[in-house]
Image 1 (cartoon, rainbow, N blue to C red):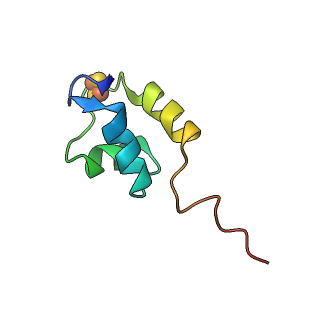
Image 2: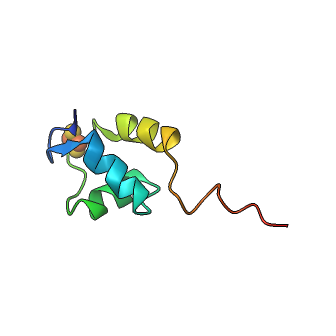
Amino acid sequence: MYVCLCNGLTDSQIRGAIASGASRPKEVYAACGCNAQCGCCTGTMLTILRDQPAQSTQAASGN
Ligand code: FES
């Protein structure tokens, strides 16, 4: 499903960027080699980020 029409980004591309460490929309755009244009997709992107947090956080629960 297309999430960002300006850049042609799909939810799978966004999930892939998050899995690679992107934790903010800006980092998702960067990981996909583009930048925010109209910003309409940011809300959906934040929802995906909340649904699938970046791997670097949450996992560290030592001691
Ligand atoms: S839809 Fe993503 S920047 Fe416009």
